[in-house]
Length: 411
Ligand SMILES: *Cc1c(COP(=O)(O)O)cnc(C)c1O
Image (cartoon, rainbow, N blue to C red):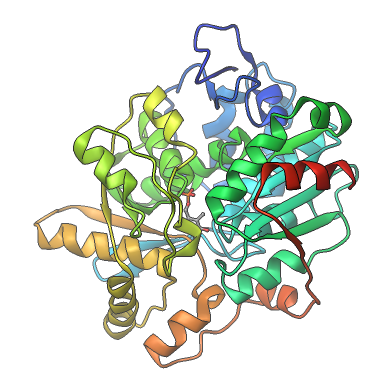
């Protein structure tokens, strides 16, 4: 399927495969497929369901014939639904780096590898993206990963993960915010001399190669529950939530979709007032959602999609983690807690039907927050433990576009 830039909707566009390898559109906009097709799907295992869901986008594409193998190679772990009272948690953290971003990063890596890409992938991370992308591209021939993360704003275990890969993965600790990291990556990607010197690619949630596969687990969950379901999706850059909104557009049996942010409340305010005001990001316990200017907003506005949204402050994140343990014996991460609290409010207002909260990361990544609240050790999943057992190192970097561009020039 052809893809156009959000900023040049009338242009002829490029094939999806090219949009996936390019990342950001040349005019600075985000690539969008020209249509969101409707599909009829039967329930099934995640890899097969993903292949059927994504088939219309990959028809007539270089990668089309390999879509089933791509999905089988990327989705090697499950996204189980577990009970949360009469509702469910959709556990998206059973991949190699224990956050939902493993799904998209692994799919993107399979696509780029099969396209024969030789790239330096730039990625700004508010905590989990960097590790997922690093794991997905680690030791892939011809590929190099450059990670930028904001110093002091990711959890200790997240930081350890980011620096634990080595080989073709370079981690930079930026003395700034996530928004700085994101801006620096965009500037480097748009720098003509650098682009001609290095084959630059991106793997942030602006990448279609990450966005599209994320629809699959929402579709799987919606079909598994059998009745129409409603979702609460913890949101930062709007990648995961946009995938849920797209799955609904494709005809999956999805009712309400409610976004949950932390105190970075730009989106809830936007849906309420209709006016977008970008703001600096503020530091919260749910650090992977500390985003002031969500990059995927441009796609949401392009498609004129709307959603409901609510926000949760740090004190309530804490009380929700404690309450969810007391009531359900479930330990949840601070991001998931935003979703669980928003669901509690919805139910208190009389919302009916079955609800699913996307559980976006494993609580063991945030043990310094979660363990004191629940008075228990959170067992570390084996894949995460393997990374924590490796040595870790990162290089400091000033929060300026020039600093990144010059450092990349000498990589
Ligand atoms: C990235 C992330 C989010 C936010 O997802 P977006 O796609 O950026 O909205 C939420 N929770 C966790 C644990 C994350 O890593």
